[in-house]
Length: 110
Length: 229
Image 1: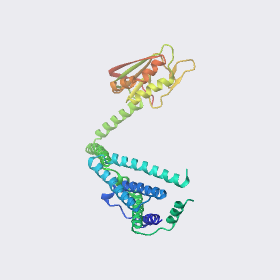
Image 2: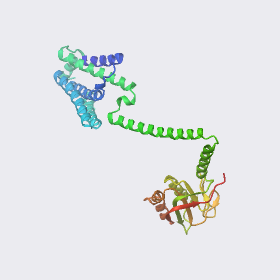
Image 3: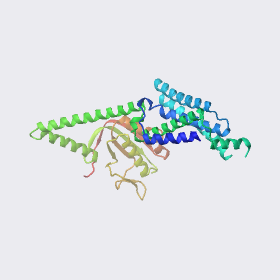
Image 4: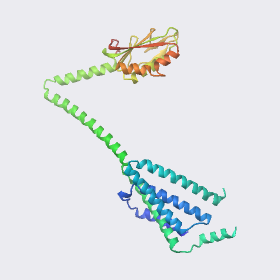
């Protein structure tokens, strides 16, 4: 519940303040967001399974975002940034879908 | 509702606030904030702000190529202007106008033309070739860069049309065409011949419909037929 409040507060804050994205962060923020979404859905799934753990969530959230951004960063250094970010988005997208499917099964038994 | 499930529901509704929960909420807030920020910056950012380096390099290359082309256009026009200004008798202007009139006359089909090109003869003893095939042939020649085309004794212009004659045979611009059909086209002979010869192209199609096309490349093709202006 408190997490949901935090999420809504963040969205509202972002729209109210609408800060610009710093230049150095621009290529990595979208990927990091997708990674964080994956962590969030994973956390929601764990919550519904009754195995949610704060520590696991925090660690997976941070490591997901940082690793996703790092992969894109290294991709840019190697000259395959756009391909690698596509790859990362695909992998994370698949994970998000499977997490959402599990959540759906849990919630609607279907 | 089973016991653990009930417990979970109550936990959902009445969360205990502790450090772990707070950090989770903070991270979620950070995520929401980042999403909102990103959506916002994506909204107002032009396509260049989000484009990657290689895309930008491509765009830049296109633009500089374009500006080179435009610059050379400017140079040409400047030359023309300088020539016109220096020329008090109007000689250069007359020359220019004459040259342009000639170009347009050749394109419009009102002047005879000479140049390298091809001759295409379509032998159609059984009369199987219809107007549509002849039009395809003409379009293929135009696509391959034919500048001037003559069919039989008829100069081809923008409004040229082919029809099937009621009693058999075909007509172009309302005049009956004699068989074998003879196309003369001025353009790069090699390109024109290749275009007609591609697999599944005009010559193959003619062959399957029972006619035989022969392409001869010539260094000099003279087209005498003209259209009335």
